[in-house]
Length: 219
Image (cartoon, rainbow, N blue to C red; front, top):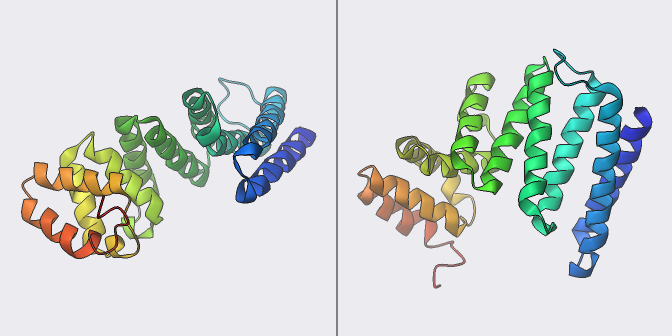
């Protein structure tokens, strides 16, 4: 079991190092390393984890997390992107199901939400983030910025009132001024605010917070 974990970690780290310098011609090698790492982790899981048990040992949870993360990281360059992301979702779900530790469940929910977002399954992503908020029992101000934006974006297509509420929170707390906002997020925010009767606020945010920084403003 420890051999699978160690070999898998080593392969994943090699892929991660390649990612930082890789050109398109290296994508095949990156994919190969990630796939080999996933096979090591999944091989280790077969040895120590049993579906239906109340909980899994720590090593199994680590391998499930790492297999999920490898799948998530390789998805942008994978030919079968959807299938790779669905594999990540399954591993993160196993983490959530078979751990008794709140911090592990929180990590699993966060990455399930992010992965569902990449799959375009906004309602599933929104549900995962709402569950995460309830489990954490803490202010949204303590969340990382990327997760907050994904939460708001997923809510916009699933529960527009909630989406508008989250975009207003991001605006009031200065998150929109911290750097360029991606066009997709800006569009979703605009939709959520206008659909909930906040057109004047949408116009003001666009003029004051988005337009000066948006790299696509002249597109």
